[in-house]
Amino acid sequence: MSVQIDMSGRRAIVTGGGSGIGEAIVKRLAEAGAAVAVADLFGDRAERVASEVLQTGGQAVAVQVDVTSVPSVEQMHAKVEEELGGVDVLINNAGAWTLKWFTQMDPAEYNRDIDVCLYGTMHCTRVCLPGMIERKYGRIVNTISDAGKVGEPTMTVYSAAKAGVAGFTKALAKEVGRYSITVNGFSPGTTRTPGNADIRADWDEEKVVKLYPLRRLGETIDHANAVLFLASDLSGWITGQILSVSGGYTTV
Ligand SMILES: NC(=O)c1ccc[n+]([C@@H]2O[C@H](COP(=O)([O-])OP(=O)(O)OC[C@H]3O[C@@H](n4cnc5c(N)ncnc54)[C@H](O)[C@@H]3O)[C@@H](O)[C@H]2O)c1
Figure (cartoon, rainbow, N blue to C red):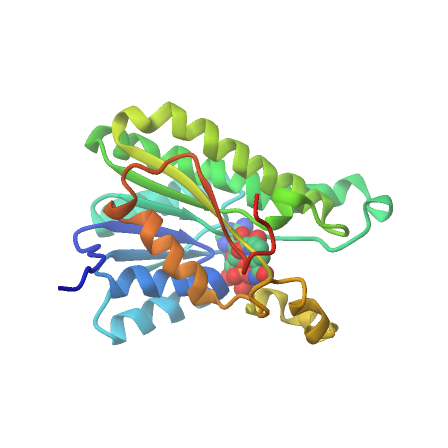
């Protein structure tokens, strides 16, 4: 007998779903039977991913959203409620990072990483929680980063923003557990995505992979598999946890 993860009947939003890790999560959830709203700042990216899901027989809708804007997030939520009928699963995955030594940063540059990663997560969670509380069911999964766990030089503000998301995850889990809503995070190590292609182009990859006990960089599917578990009923007694998906880079 084989065990399968069945997400049929579940409605999910994946922010940053138009590229990289988010795109892989969208496709994995859809393959497991969920109806997925692909939410991205770039509407064309969201449309492409949603149409690829539809072509393979899955259920998806595209939504343009800027997670840093409360009105835009409220519009996204209203559209998903209208098209899918509710939200059972929220994957807060949209992210942004500035690569710079902290001593060279202007305070005005702090905002983007914190707005997208931390406030974006809060804004999207705020609109989805009332429906989850009413239905007494929810799965919230936040994309964190090993940078937020151990800190990365040249990514100080991003590290702080992601550590903030980890704190939010743990505290919220304790608030909403009574409604059978779980709130967890996963923490990627360096993963090949369009978002970091320019950074990886400057690396000596052979050296970088030696930092990883499993001796390779992450692939987007590594995260999609972990998120599928955290978004499913199989993880029903796990909440407030941050799962590193990083080839052993961090073990805390
Ligand atoms: N790739 C890695 O090595 C890595 C490592 C650790 C953590 N992460 C995290 O994983 C997540 C996904 O990263 P990725 O590498 O797949 O990046 P990516 O750039 O390939 O995809 C991110 C998507 O988020 C969207 N986005 C950005 N700002 C947004 C906003 N304001 N509103 C809505 N959507 C927005 C982008 O348009 C893009 O499509 C991020 O949270 C990132 O911090 C990535």
